[in-house]
Length: 304
Image (cartoon, rainbow, N blue to C red):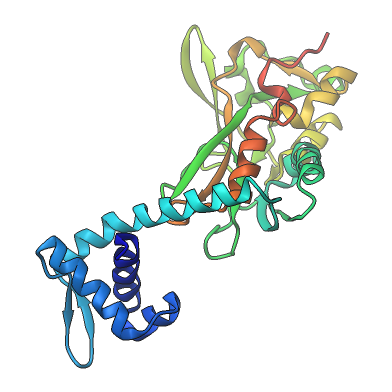
């Protein structure tokens, strides 16, 4: 009798609190599933389940065994799926959440390249500048830029994204060019509504990271909007490099304090910790992590 079958029978009974449901899931009889669990308990020499005529519950040993055997079962299923999928094309849907600006400018070209390689995969891409609930809203993964605050999710780094402080030549002519980051306290600055501290910008000054207080009339939750507003001469902006790269090259924006940049933001794929990734989702994440065009801005923006 296969030990994997015994473990799977036990896990299904434990999660469903029912031998009947477990049997249906396995396509076996309830009598056989009960035998699988009994044989597993006999082999281990411990009782894993409390059984009455009306209920099934885990013993303390059962709780421990379930927590350890589930990852093994997931690993076994993943092994079989990967071997099978080496011989067949990927197929099925992938539901993705991404920031609006980055999704439109950088992610969609990379997804187009992935889609060309895997024509049987359906890509459902939802743009949003709020932090979606991946599990509750049914996403397979989310692309995020910046601090990763949700400890319940797994994180795969895809690249790095510098933050660029910039203003238009027209704004600087009117308001003057700030001499150092601290001088921003007297300038009109665009606040990022996605940040936990939108009125605090950080710089590396004399080798030390320093917080500078800023303020302004404009508060925007989309960095592409901040970049556009700055290019129109409204205020100083702090934006991810991908949103301002073209404007810096054209001269519509001028970077300030390039030598004072702090560590770049991380661009990452986030996905649930307790969900086994399908091969198609894992393959997409590997594709994104290996696509150099996704985070072209990881180097200093060339304005020359």
